[in-house]
Length: 466
Image (cartoon, rainbow, N blue to C red):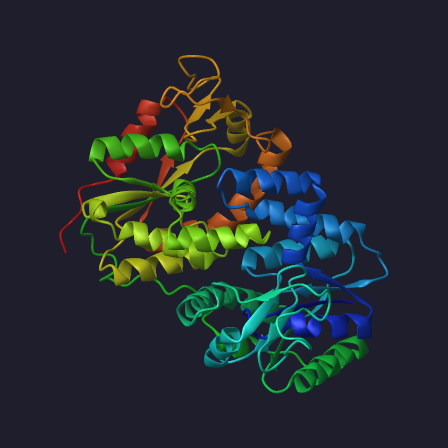
């Protein structure tokens, strides 16, 4: 029997996992714990993930997928799994369904632990975490036996810097935006349950035990689509006529890995005199300058955790608000998913701006595999080169800064194909969303660079004043 328990941070998922796993003979699967395990044991996946982190990059979703897949295949087949906080997105839900289907052990139920946002904010203000084993405690709801000391391992307890009212509210907005489609997915499958997470730990634990016991007996009652839709928004609202009004060249650039987004962004920015905002560069810059957001991201990385979407979104919004973007910008690497598109719309509304165009540089997958197999990256400034299409003037040396060029460990055909599967699964709904909004321009990404640039510029007609 496979069970998933989802809900925002602070609802008590970790608190209830141990008792449920013991009672029903389930193996506890927490992505954060698995991720830290791979980092600490220096597994192949851990080494790959650490390389991204050392380069100041976000760990991509396909690495997390591979960690979950590796765990599923090495566990005892007679043991069920208890997925704690996973899946978090509709893409992850589809990935997990397919993985469990290949193992002939489908998901039995997905439980959404419902707690009002105001209660969560109050809970997290009193939360403490063990530095060593990450066990959560609460000042009043679940205090440790000794003040400041973990019951489980004796480690020091601390309060996370992101457990402030403002940051928790931002995380909740991101969570609801991302989770709506997950709830809709499992409600449509008849596998979603919505249980209250309010009350004492014993009361909530009793509700969970009763429900899982009913699942085991085949007598459980599941939520329908209407209940899921009422719980949180399950679709990104279409852009309004006012939101479509163009006031500047505010451009989003989409394309698979190796499609040439970075190269085309540089050319477009030079021609249109716009800043190039690449989320990878933005993330590294915040870490390098030790901004408040950079420090917050670093705390997650130091704990061996994935940096959450709300931190990345905040970095993007701060950058879009800077004076040099008034005439427009080329945004590269964000959004990657439909929920992030909703986040970008909200950001632009707050900034009284509107996306004017979305360019999707379209290149066949096999061409992308060939391109990435010859790609080189500068260790210092991350400038891209290619052994066939964009050779450096001096072999192994960056033209821009003189840094060393290297080939990324994930630029091999097998890994590239896995990344492309993730790209298509995440991006196709995003492409459909922008096409429906009348903003999408598909650009043929094959041929000489100058021709691709010409096609891109032609798609960017002058913005119409509001």
